[in-house]
Length: 182
Image 1 (cartoon, rainbow, N blue to C red):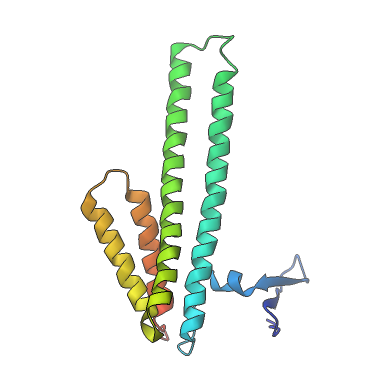
Image 2 (cartoon, helix red, strand yellow):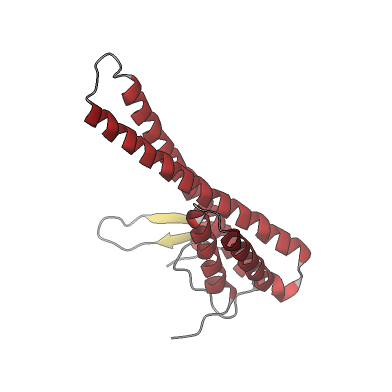
């Protein structure tokens, strides 16, 4: 692996299909789910890794939302184009059930996106109001408070939001503390 001193990292990948070098940005490397930081990694690198991961997750969720919204639009359009020919009751019921399922997926993806955006804002707030090595600890505790308040409100349908916040907590645990050598 070859690493340059610029903002982007240059990685040579040896495989049978390509001998080309691939440019990978530091944010992409730091957002990797399997990232292992050395014990000596600074707090700034750890914070940047959490930020990059949150940004990647938000972007992936936006893309997922777009794909699901497109599927919903196509299904709705298909249903709208068939008024001239009458669908049998069973067919119409199947189409309406699929529409309801897609709408539910849209709501779940929107909740996850909202949770990632909320987590990003919370991280920035912790950075502004906390100093030194306690930033990620305070962030984790703030996430825990948020999860408890959502769970305590006992609002139905909040599971996707809670799962996304739990993923963020796991990422902070994974990145925030120096890893033990195996």
